[in-house]
Length: 128
Image 1 (tube, rainbow, N blue to C red):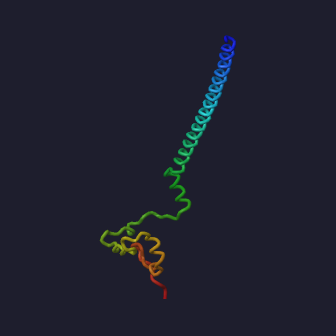
Image 2: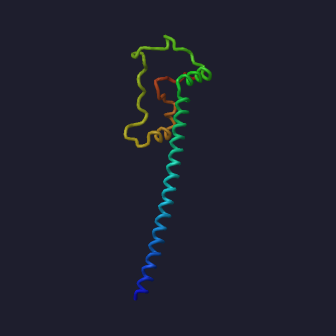
Image 3: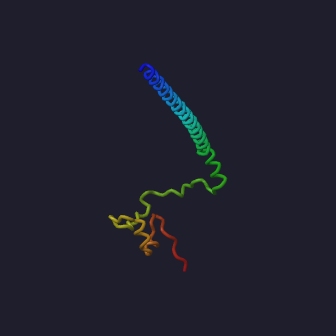
């Protein structure tokens, strides 16, 4: 009887040791996963910081002004380019009736509306 009890205790000891080893192995794997994720997060934060710095450099007003001077034929604003508010033309009428669920589709479906001005700038007169 004591021998059987000793064998059962030794078997339970081996099972407990195997279970403890399994838990240790899984915890080591999880710790490695956490370390990898932290390293990946650190790399992503560094990449974000680099992109923000590059965006700030690209978005600087001095750089944009230099590019505008180089690539656009802009001239200073002249006094005659301004007008009084009462000289502005009337707002165009609504082309799409209220309640239409797809206003862009409505405009595309009616080709006769393509000649209607949609802004305060009138279209140039047709050449004869």
